[in-house]
Length: 159
Image (tube, rainbow, N blue to C red):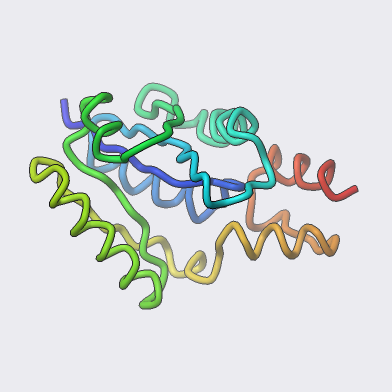
């Protein structure tokens, strides 16, 4: 079985993230979508809330997607879940430098885990969680960018 891990903070999950999952599901037998707990970030949603929003948002991939969370080194978590590769989304050139650096570090830490970069559909190249949170905080319409469960959760957070 070919299993891949797709890590992220997913704060919140967007249609861009879901597009990357859709592409990964087409290439691998199983995709572990994992919420990274990053102590240097202050997320809007708790880890449990993000995991639950992912479960609801990705239920169409029921048998091919596993959702979890982790704290620590990504390559160690990848080994724990039996993943042979890490999937990362690249939206634009500015993502590449950071993602390339992380891929090289992960290779140094664990040479048997490969990083695979996937590009989302071009309609999602400008989309990221920070933009969504900012627009939602100003009561802008984000319904075309996030699943309904996320839209509702953001409305609750920002009143």
